[in-house]
Length: 438
Image 1: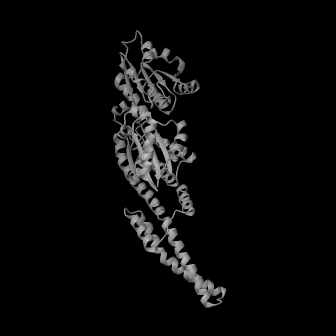
Image 2 (image 1 turned 45 degrees about the vertical axis):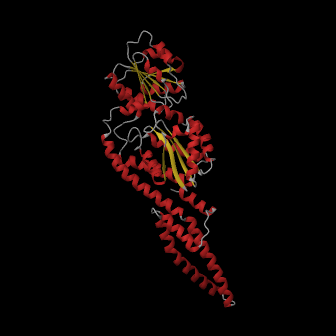
Image 3 (image 1 turned 90 degrees about the vertical axis):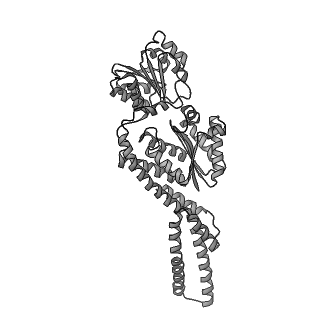
């Protein structure tokens, strides 16, 4: 079973491409089912966040599975395969495992050490698992990735010295306006990122925070928590004239702010600057809004240019994190390598057992009527010989399996002993038990 990942992120694709390939939570069950049914795919997990969409595969037919997955993604984002290919990356086996571990540890995020991504990895895995889309190898992979992410954060403190997309949005506002004291900020959305942004704004001296959300109850709860004021989303255009800064992050699948709305709201206020920061994917604000007089619009990609003064300590922690990841990757492949030889070991032991039983039967027939004690002594001797002969073979094969050329040892053993190897249900059960037990 081979592990592959195919995807795109903030480094390989701009936001207008990423939003086309985003998978909202409510579509994941259907998407996972469709992928799992494609030829060559034994298991799948979809990780979709603001900054990445990645499909993790367990497959016995890598080339076929990869082609089917790319075709699926092409249809999803309505881009030709050749155009989509420009933005995609693919990793297999070692690099695929290392990539996921780095993602879970926050080393592949826009903001180094981001804490939110670990929860997103865990959620992506749980959705896939609960919908029957995973495979025992993927189960173990994601469980160990989550464990690695926790270990990195515990041992390196990489997520300290707060830096996040929400924090970066507030820092961008500080760069434009200087002090935020006395400013009025409108926060659209009441999710995790909006909540973090609102708290950072409050901590940076913003005196008036307006919160608007599709669910007025959630907006009211957030406003109460930060000392702000909740506003119904239907009145968005009415309250826009009060805002100096707008930070938007909703789960809407379409624009919620359009040029004509903003233009009407700013009539007579064109000389007063308005800053809008759109940290949603898909985007909340029509890019054409940024062309209006006095309006400065920034999206999530612009945040990569925000001050990085809190990253020095995280860079040091990242070096230690890479060492931890290397250890964990090696551990995973030791587990995976040992499992890859189980069908061969099972076949070898079955053949040895069959030979032993046949020879014991012949021996007992020649002896006439051996007593139960004699049968037990002879049977114990035969078992001991077989077990001792196979012991070193099994141990050495497991050790060789985790080396780069380990498969050659497996193939040689199968050829030398004339083994007919197949993945029996017992082997599959062993794999599942070991994967779920990590």
